[in-house]
Amino acid sequence: MWDERKPDETIEVTVDGYRVVTYSFGSGEETLLCLNGGPGLPCDYVRESHSWVADHGFRVVAFDQLGTGASDRPDDSSLWNITRYVEEVETVRQSLDLGRVHLLGQSWGGWLSIEYGITYPENLRTICLANTCADMPHLVSELNRHREALGPETGAMMLHHEAEGTLDHPEYQAAITILNYRHVCRLAEWPAPLVRSLDDWNMAPYMTMQGPNEFLYIGNLKDWNRIPELHRITCPALITVGKYDELTPDCAMRMKLALPDAEFVVFPNSSHTPFFEEPEAYAQVLIEFLNAHRG
Figure 1 (cartoon, one colour):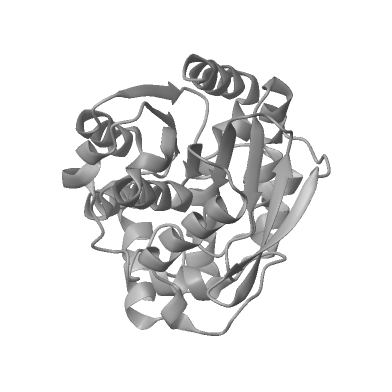
Figure 2 (cartoon, one colour):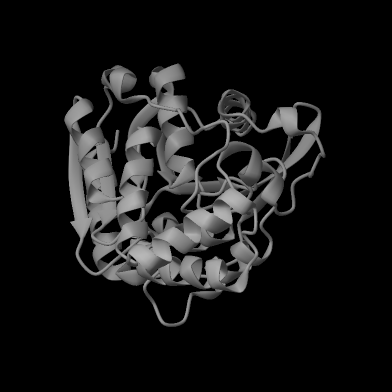
């Protein structure tokens, strides 16, 4: 379902004195605002895997978060915190006059969507939480299960390199590659928009907020947990997750139990990118949810 169509509009928005580039598809009265993962990734992969929603009467908006893609890339680590990113989302929403939005956040974009929804619940029509979680300490325990599945010898090797700071060692990187192909994208050939985003990764926000890779969380989000506050997001919610997702179905179920009005869908042949791994099934789930909550 992904599509490299050109946006109908490319609009620059000023955020904290910097330039943030937004991309808009379609002209529907209601907007699907997409927040991609990372942090530090450009929005290519989530933009091109969701632009098709514009064909169903919605406006679709994505943007290169500050520090990524075509947006400005300031060298200031104080900018890389989730509270500032929430205000960035709100600035984009107001600047583009989007009104109440259907907010879709994938991975890190889901954490940001949760934080935004708790801060500005009145601005949401719905929230779509894709391949994400609301409890980082619980996620870390789930990631440790993925690591343990590689076997005790490999697990010990990974811990050794993490303790020594030798994360670029070939054997450590080989283990991370296996985990990525099991739990990030299980396709033999990764889709072009995903590869393009990964090739343009700004590691400064990622290292500051998360850590050196998808399976080691040591940044300023390592203790983040919004499960106790999820009840404040009262709009309809859609939670989607892959069976083999690095952010596991158990993570997703914790959100389902904490949200007042949530649907929960597991894609049986997917990991962290069902919109690429099972695109037809994912598209059907998403558009049925959005159509059910128009108006």
